[in-house]
Figure 1 (cartoon, rainbow, N blue to C red):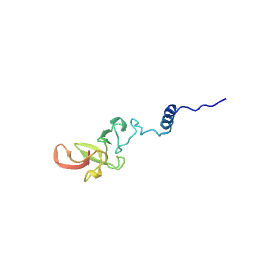
Figure 2: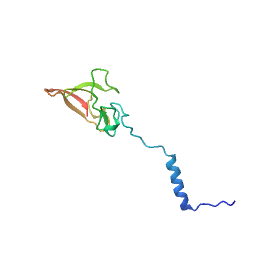
Figure 3: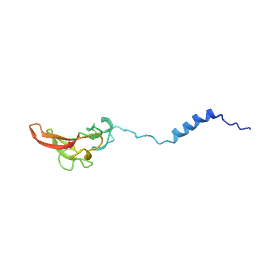
Figure 4: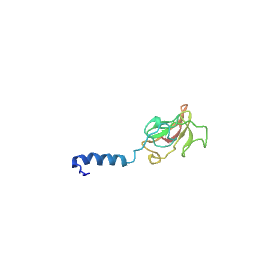
Amino acid sequence: MRSRRLPPWMLAPCALALLIAACPPGEVHVPGSKDMGEECFDDEECDDPGTCLNGVCSGYPCEGDGSCDNGLACERVSDQQSCVVPCEDANDCLARQECTQVPRSQGNPEDTITVCL
């Protein structure tokens, strides 16, 4: 049996197929797989009841010290206990979050806390 060489124009698609098969897959975004304080791309990635706020899983209610994961603090923000990242400047925040001063209570706007939002 005689072997034949493939013409060069037929080799390119074969080489491309081999490269694609050998490349590792990109980051997979699995719904509900991210914990509070982890970076995210959309709300569905964050564990329920969290939301993706400026690239970070946020918005988790809490019941006091020690009830937040990943180094987040349980603080009163706008009359609601929430897991937040306290900050002094934007370097303390993840992703696109900003260090923002917010009231702890809507009834007392003078009582504020600075957190990443």
